[in-house]
Image (cartoon, rainbow, N blue to C red; front, side):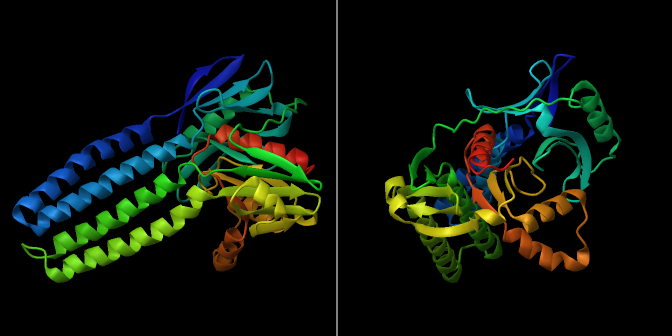
Length: 360
């Protein structure tokens, strides 16, 4: 995930690894020619197997682009600045967010069944920032890294808190009646939708091609057209609101509301609320780069039940006999998905909201 680029008494710098970029680029580069060759061969010979090969190439290339997009969600650099006593998260360009050492509990190691051993930074507010993963190997390397980082980074005894609160430039804000409205356009959501459509259609074409005989039967052709048409119609229905509306978050003394509207000015007059939480129930506003819990692109508003649930999930205290109840509680968590933005911008946005709502 991250590799140590620099380590001395003054600072530690972790750089994002190149694994996702290499694999994603390789899959895209190999998949595109495979798709084109398969489709060209099908057009020339009518071979169903050629069509199946083309569909497989489309799936391969789209999956590669998905991996490249997933990499963009990761912070580019993570810096522990011992002189300033700040943990610094750096994204693309000049995007940057800071957390004071006094806000951090320390660096720990945990085991997650789906991901292996993970070294992570843990804040006093409960947020998690994954630093390093060992995969499914022994935990000794992870434990050694966590111990080494804790020895080098001066968390203990620090009271440094970063009070700066900055909104990212892509967020528009207005205030009305004591409530502050935040609005932003989806970025990357439509391209992800199209890539998902490409993978689905590629799988349909692959199945039809390899399951047919030498030539594609009329039934298989109609099946491909029907499924691809239905998927395209569904994708278009989802894409239109992403392109024509803005996401709106309203935060004030009464609580938090989230939904979509034509514009922020329209939202002030009223908007259709998708999720909401009363201020009295709100105990935390958090951005976590927590890949194991799938929270890498979400700002999360937590009531006591959700807060305790995420703590139990992190520490592995969930009982298998209660997995159904746990899943239900997890999917009820008030999460705002903001894809395609720098992790440092999301951290700044969450901290800004926390200050406005007076939540530490």
